[in-house]
Length: 293
Image: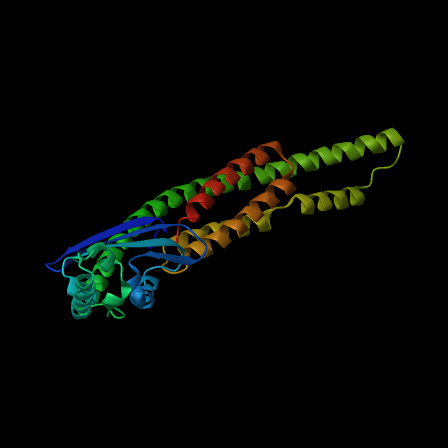
C-alpha cells in the first residue's frame, strides 16, 4: 500500500539517568533529504541512524530532532580536573599571602577554563546510545503509522477520482462516432455545393477519398485505447508497493498527453468540454500524487 511523504512521529523515553524525545516531521520532495537536529557530541552516531531512516523512506524532506536531558554527568563523559584546580588555587593563595592579600576564587571564571575540563565523549555512553537508537526506531514506527494512514486516505481519494476519469473517457468514446458522422455529412454537403456552383460533375471516388482522409484525421481510437490502458495501469500502481509515486507521476503525464490529443483531433465543442473536465480532475490527481512516496 502506498504511503504518504507527509507525516509526524514522536517517542519519549524516560530513565533514571536520562530523558530523551525524538520527533520526526516530513513533507514531500523528489529525493530523500534527512536533516538532523541533535547535540554535537552525538554526531558520531548520525551515519548509523541515517541508515535506519533510509530503510523506512526513499523520498521526501525529513526533519529529525532530538531533545536530550541527562541527569547523570558521568554519562556525558565530561569530567572536571579537580586536582589541577586545587593546585591552581593553592598557588594563587601563596601569591596573595606574599602580598598581604586574601585570595578569593572566581568560580565563574574557573568554569570557563577549558583546560580544566576533560571530554571523553568521543563515543557516547553505550547504554545511552542503545536507548537513543531504540527511541529513534520507535519514533520511526509512529511516523510510518501516520504516513501509512495518510497513504490509505490518498489511495481512496485517487481511486474515486480514477472512476470519474473513466466516466469522462467513456463519454468521449461515445461522442466520437457521432462526430465522425456529422463531419462526414457536412463534408459531403460542402463538396456537393461547391461542385454545383462550379457546374462540375460529381465524383463518388473523389468523395470517398475525402471522407477517408477526414475519418483518419478525426479518428482517436488509438488515443482512447492508450488512455484506457494508462487509467488501468494507474489503478494497478495504486495497489502496488514500491516506487508508487514516481510511476504515478509518469503515468499521469502520459494520460494528460493522450486526452489532450483527443481534444485537438476531435474538433468538437462537447468533446472539448469533456476534455477540460478530464484535465481538471487529472490535475487534482497530480496534486495528490505529489504526496505519495
